[in-house]
Amino acid sequence: IELRDYLKNKTTIITGPSGVGKSSLVNFILDDHYQEIREVSKKTAKGIHTTSYVQMFNHPDGGQIVDTPGIREFALWDINKDELASYFIDFLDYNDDCKFLPCTHTHEPNCSIKEAVENGEIDLERYQSYLSLLESIVNKT
Image 1 (tube, rainbow, N blue to C red):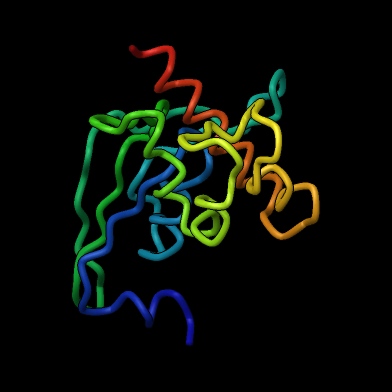
Image 2 (cartoon, helix red, strand yellow):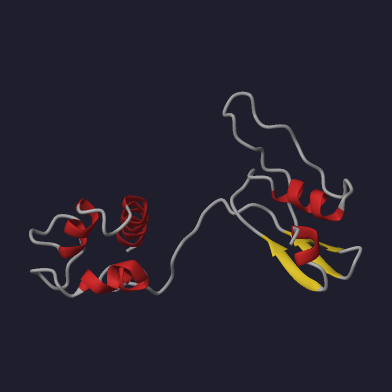
């Protein structure tokens, strides 16, 4: 099934980081040039933030497409550092097996999450995302 057909008669919100092509996707889905787009930056080789407000368009075959400005920052609220790992579903099988509880899964010896990352049981990028979010929580307090 093609994307245009899949989105018929639905309300779809297009969201994501700045400069990744959300407006280009909207233009493709609507088969017209509704949203302004800019060329990829020659300096950074990344897309350039263009959309500055939310706009909804009618899909020609029914439904709506909502284009949103890019997300520049993501932050967590009301989560403390000791509970962050429980929000990573792929950590759940290992989270309670650490030698020290609570465990930040950063520097403690015999940490089951760090061992699972080293053994390839938890994806390294997921672990790095966890560390980045943990740092933002620690720095916020």
